[in-house]
Length: 127
Image (tube, rainbow, N blue to C red; front, side, top):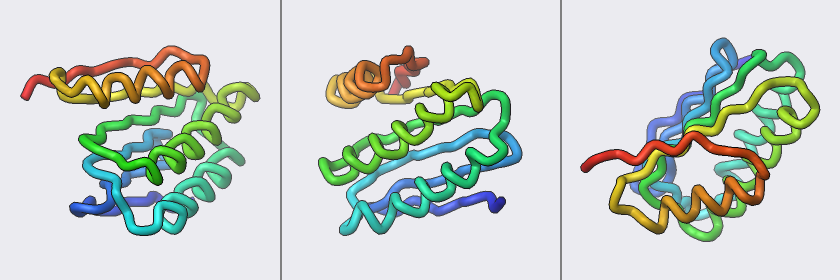
């Protein structure tokens, strides 16, 4: 299983999915022209990771902005990870980072937290 790293740009996020540690990171901005094309390989990676996940998996979300199209695909990523957690394959920990003054990103985290029906570890950052 390969370690996926993608350098972030103005349009797509930094990605660092490491199967050896079970840590997955999405950071930066997510406004790709084709969210499906960008996120589907990440979902495929998670499905492969599900064959032999670490006892604890960490999803770190450190996005400063994401658009509506990305929102749906981020939800697909999170839902796929939640299935692993619910099946007892791994203990999923979601860490959500946001600027302490960014109410929109904090609310987005709370919405995902509610949809996933699990408590996130919230990390407000000082600017």
